[in-house]
Amino acid sequence: MGISIKDIARALNISPSTVSRALNGAYGVKKETREQILEMAREKGYVPHLGAKELVNKRSNLIGLIIPETDFEVRPAFFETFPSLIKTLRMYGKETIMISLPPDRYEPGELPRICKARKLEGVVVLPGFLENHPVLRDVLDMKLAAVVLEESTQGRHCSNLGTDEVDGACRAVRHLIQSGHRRIGFVNGPRDLVYICKLRYEGYLKALQEAGIPFDARCVIDSDFTGRGGARSVLTLIERNPGMTAVFFANDLMAMGAIHALQEQGMRVPDQLSVMGYDGLFVGAYFTPPLTTVQIDHARIGISAAEMLMELMNGQTGRSRVVKPELVIRESVKILPSFDN
Image 1 (cartoon, rainbow, N blue to C red):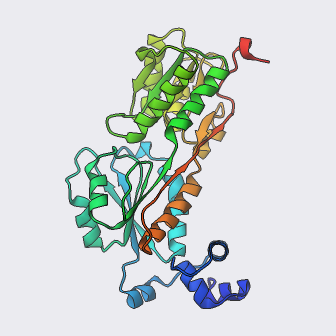
Image 2 (cartoon, rainbow, N blue to C red):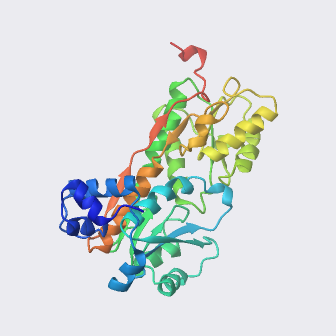
Image 3 (cartoon, rainbow, N blue to C red):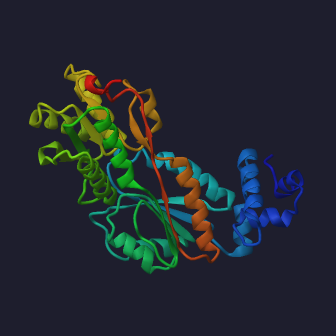
């Protein structure tokens, strides 16, 4: 049998009503106390009685997770965010439903209709929509509690939780430059469809400019965020740029697909070509060679998104938060001899 509200209250020497308010995201609970309660609830496997809550509150207790309808292969980072997001929402007595929307075929008004039909109390919108996409305009117009990840959308009922994509990409390319590389390729995602691709491209350009390296359009190619796309793109770049020594990929999946393609061609990574990824997928640490990448704390983002959504559902105004990514140095980038101290 799982732990109860009374069990948590007894263990922390506080009242059951305080525990209940904390788990429901209500006001009147100190931040430190709320964190203690949520931590114990997570550790002990507290499961709220959703049916009873719905009867009492006449709420659906349902939160929509909005994702772009694209090739399944392009979304591994989503599934590193989902566990902590879903688990934290459950601590607040909320369950989740996944809603897939096609970015290129979306009809304005579709999301509000879905939210009304499902009686959703709030939504979390995952990356994959351009800054002014109709989905995001609908999110603002329908006045439902919403947290948008990676985009700049913010309003009275909408918070924005993003990663500093420009800084992350700039750090990646700086590391390549500091390792002695000057001819650096960039395989991006679809800039015409995904907002973060524009930001990562901006970071790539910024790092080159800082180092005084001239931009060469032949070193850049837009792909589709898939492993297959990464494989195709790296071979194209090599053909275009015989002197290229490193390639930065806008996600880990493309980087790993590229490494596989290079190895099939008999090329050694990083001895003959250095490879840099982006996202920090856990599988990158176990790849051959282990992938140097930009790490996004997906678990922390999931927890923060849930907490920010509960703030909105309790009457707070939308706010913006930016998380800094971290460079993770492994074995897929070679330090060129003249730079090896």
